[in-house]
Image 1 (cartoon, rainbow over the protein chains, first blue to last red):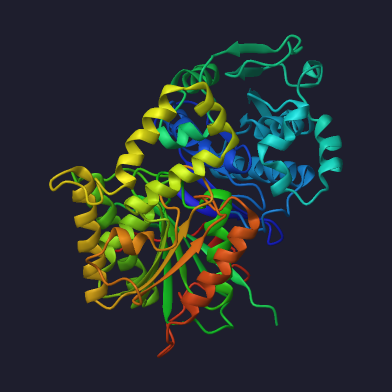
Image 2: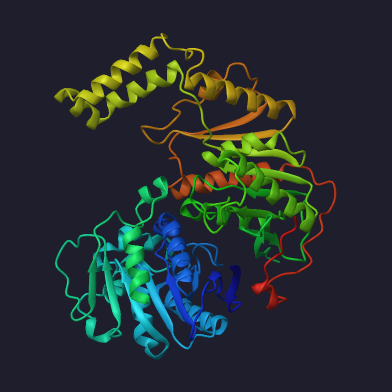
Length: 228
Length: 312
């Protein structure tokens, strides 16, 4: 396991790499995309456990902080959606180089899911499977810590973000995309032909997860199973 | 020239299983003698709530300090320990490993510890035992309740609209709570009965603060009272709660009446940061500390991939 910085001098990113514990056959890799703000803090333990289980299952795993978040360089409030997508692309290149894998599985939680979806469309040839874990709906921006982490005016951000909602965009996403829902959506959403799995549980990014030290075990296992 | 900083990801400890981030001034600037170590808040990883510790570490690095934020074993990115230490003892051993790494790799001899909540408790338990520790910033450490605390708690509950509605509707919890706390407020339980948990906590805190003062450690204690169910609600509560320790006049105690436990409001965080920067800056610089030999991120692409081998 290696903690390190990567990326350009302009956007220095912090990452944590876990090599596959039991690698057989060609290299397989997973890039984990965090949620934002305190949601990242509350879900950190879950994402770490997910990474450990994926590594045990034979995947090379990289998780990282977007620019202006976590341990990456940049001030809080310096980020924007386009820049964070650029960071995911940088991380894709990084894990391909480190692991030797030809393609990458992308798994994003909350805002990380929305960003991963956008990048998966752009970098289709690099992506094997895509997991969208409780992606943000268009009107959730205020509660997801995004305004505090972004340099864009809230109105502009909301406008931009509305374009990132997953529902109704199934046809543009990779065929091997799984939507994992632990929350009850407020309204039925159209995920088209995408695989949708429902695992009712307390949200991974809930503060109670941090206070109790618990993780959503079944949701984590569904991801591991789906990537095998 | 604008002062800058660089950061290094470090893996350290007996099995290189602990993960930390060292923030440091750029090489062209002098490194101040006093280094800062920031501890986890509970099981939240090293960036802290609202990324507070990242901001604090980088600002202090720009001011010339080496700053180390790390995850205790089993928290954040740090693995659990291989030994059979209790969580309390493991935290103490992890902290010793962190200071040893700083000493062996950066020649650090003078350290200030910063901790919030459980982090403050860990600092308090550790600080007096390590000669390298010169001071501690304790953010919302445990403060036992006092009769005046209970009286003010009741008063605050009674003026809140929600409490009035509950009170008027006769809901059991409020009545029961008020009854219990009212008994304490009139002095019947001014000092917990000997041998009770409250009494043990109070005795232990008095012992730990006493040890810190005996070692002449500098203490900056910041108490928040911005939430209704907070642990303190008046400025002098710490002094009243621990009457057998001469903290008054020996520790700098700041009372943030409107801040919550994790300093959610940006204005509260900014106020706290300025306070901490000034306080840490007050330690004397006797001489220069060696800069880690690996330079800055501007100089070395290799450094970005560098992890540091275990030193013990």
